[in-house]
Length: 155
Length: 104
Image (cartoon, rainbow over all chains, first blue to last red; front, side, top):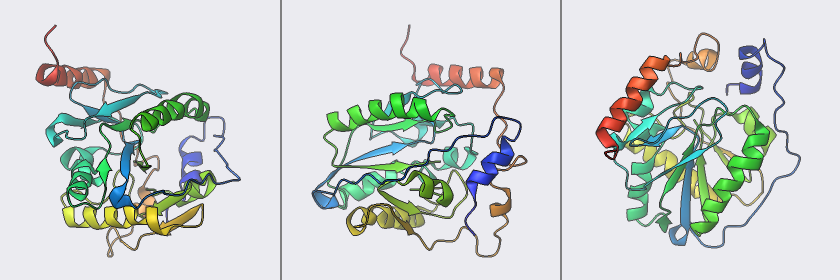
């Protein structure tokens, strides 16, 4: 049975004011214009990934980091309040599959992986901050990168 | 990608691929590149196969066919990671700066 994370979150933070989940009634839709093998794909991770000496995140931090798509495993580190990062530190590809995506790019499955890739720390309580600060800033980055699609991997 | 079916159904992204793995493993198990690759091929394939907005494709992979107890523990009070102390965080920052930082 899939874990029901909304009730789990409610239990976890039961001493706080109940969290107001984002409830959307409609689904945005942009058709893919080209097959993936001809598309520029952007990669965004909410797993709190840092490149080399990039600063870690603080609570309610809606900033993001740019990570070169050629980053090596030993140049990555992880910082997050909501999941155990032990496995990610041992093999980033279980939640930040940059090496696998590069392989799929070189095999032609993906037309081109946009450079850089992006990460933020998904444990941001304020949906307003995400909607008004983080998401628009990332959208600007995706436009600048001429991305045809983006692949969002949570943690 | 998602591992939280209930949240994804509420947020309604245009396309989603669900993998029933513990948090922190949304693209597979560590040190299993073949599994990671298959999950990614399935996930990226959904860009071309999903035609109905809001579709959530559910992947068939099972974390551990003999033990589903992680589903009881994930994201509960006893499970939550303990954040490193300020000293541990500072030490980690200093180590990364020493390794990668540009000289002042």
